[in-house]
Amino acid sequence: MGEREKELVLQVIADDCLSGFFGSWRDEFFGGPRVKEFEAAWSRRFQVKHTVSVNSATSGLFAAIGACKVGPYDEVIVPPYTMSATAMAPLAYGAIPVFADIDPDTFCLDVESARRAITPRTKAILTVNIGGHPARLHDLRALCEEHGLYLIEDNAQGPLAKENGKYAGTIAHIGVFSLNYHKHIHTGEGGMCCTDDDELALRMQLIRNHGENAVEALQLEDISNLVGYQYRMTELCAAVGLAQLENADEHVGKRKHIAERLSEGVKDLEGVTPPVVREGCEHVYYMWFCKLDEQVLEVDRKTFCDALAAEGFPNAPGYIRPLYLLPLFQRKIAFGSAGFPFDKSNVDYSKGICPVAERMHYHEVVGFEPCAFALTEQHLDQLIEAFRKVHANRHSLTPA
Ligand SMILES: *Cc1c(COP(=O)(O)O)cnc(C)c1O
Image (cartoon, rainbow, N blue to C red; front, side, top):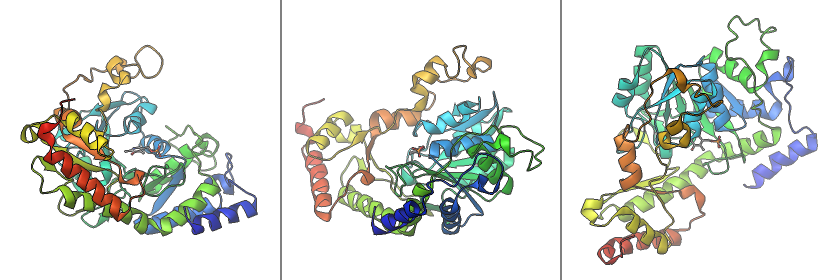
């Protein structure tokens, strides 16, 4: 947070109106002046037609699924290697998340695995630009067009990432960004949903704000999923967001610099693979994910990671356990206790369904979150030194 954030927030306080929304049909149904200004600025920055602000990316993902008319017992294909909200979004509409495996280099949804998961019940693919690296977004979009499906991007971790010159979050039918405290740019809590489609934008606005009160005035024929929630962003958050967006390149650039320094510092070590940047992509490194080869290193990952932590290199071995291993999926209990919406499906959530995701989680990936620390060049040198020290001495470590 800087002077500009303070300045814009103090203006909101001086105006004495912390939210401009009304939940009934009138001009203010679409929010207050800062909210509208922030949405317009976001659309300009990311070169999209519409941006709908919300109070979190979770809300944004729920609104996106609802806008795409996903309903009970429909299927939505998702990767398992992501924050849990990704897979909760289909469930919020009574739909079934179907997990497809990930690519072992970027950890994003594997296109062929997604293709194999398509059934007559599939309505959408919800892909994730995990760690800040774009999934194969253009290929996934083509796959969706081929099968008449919606593509939604969970771009919570990828602001300003690009694939083939186009911003992540703008290649799918809808792209959802997070502005929570941990993300590259933030408003404490918040989210932004981008789309070029007029109808999808309006449907997300209705889901955001008590849509049931507006459908008559708008003379909408199809009112499915227009049950409204309260996902509205405050004027305070929008003011902070405006200032953060002005400095987005700097905020993102800092993370990239940290990640690139780390990669450079360990790339010659045998058994260690720093993050891969696929050709044509720009990576924004919400996470710096390196991979360890336990066979080549002749030491197990836990031993290596414990030693890294002891040397002052904070790390997350495995990052996130594949989501289908959560009790929700293992027990198939979501809403009520009778098994809805799994009761009419034979969807498989057994251990082993996504072998690549499991191998990454249990054996190969080491995550480090550059966003979590204010690192100086000296800290970076020390982190690299710590990593190299552990690597050089790995054979004398006591197994964990
Ligand atoms: C942070 C995050 C979310 C949720 O964002 P909120 O704004 O906290 O709701 C969803 N998906 C991914 C991949 C995330 O990293």
